[in-house]
Image (cartoon, rainbow, N blue to C red; front, side, top):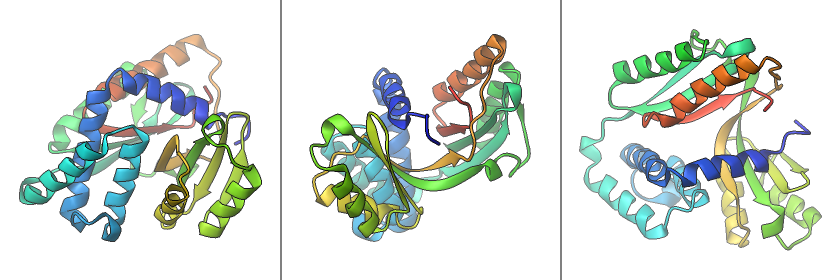
Length: 242
C-alpha cells in the first residue's frame, strides 16, 4: 500500500467532518448507544465501547460529551433499537464500495443507499461481492509533526503491544493490528501519551484501482457525497486510488 498517504486522506476527511461536526458526533453517539446496550457502560470491560470511545477522541469529541453519551445510553438501553447493516456494490469503473450503516429503519436506509449507487452510475451487489477484496484491520495513524520521539522506538512499542505491522510515511506513521488486539495496542499508545490522528477498526483494500475517465470520477464522487450526507451511514470503504 505504499504510495497512498493514509494521513492525507484522514486530514481530508477531518476537514469535511469539521464542516459537519454535529453529524459526526450524532453518528458516534449512536455507536455509543449500541455498544452500551450490547456490553454495558464500563469501557474497561466492553471492547466495542472502548473502540467507539477511541474513535470519538480521534474526532475531537470532548470527554464530557463522551461521558454524557455513555450515561444517557446506560439509562436508555432498553429503548435503543439501532442495528448494523452492511451493503456492498460497485461504482463506475468497477470500484469496490462497502457501506456500513447503523439504522432504526432498514427499508429507508436500503432505499437511500441504493439511490446513491444508482445516481453515481453504480450498482448494489450481493453480500460478499466485494468484501473479499478488503482486509479488516485495526489502523492507527500518528502525525509525524505531533510525535517528537524516535520512529524505531514507536515501532518497538507498537509491536510489543501486539501490532502486526508498522510503516513510515513522509507525513505519518501507520500501525496495523488484528481487530482483536486493536484496543490493547491503542491503549498502550494512549498510556504512553502518544497522540493519534486516527484510531479505528477499518476495511483496507488489498489493491487500489485508478479511474482515468473524468465522468467516472464525477459519478463515483457523487455516490460518495450522497452516502456521506446520509445520517444512517457510519463508514464507506472503497479501493479507489484517489
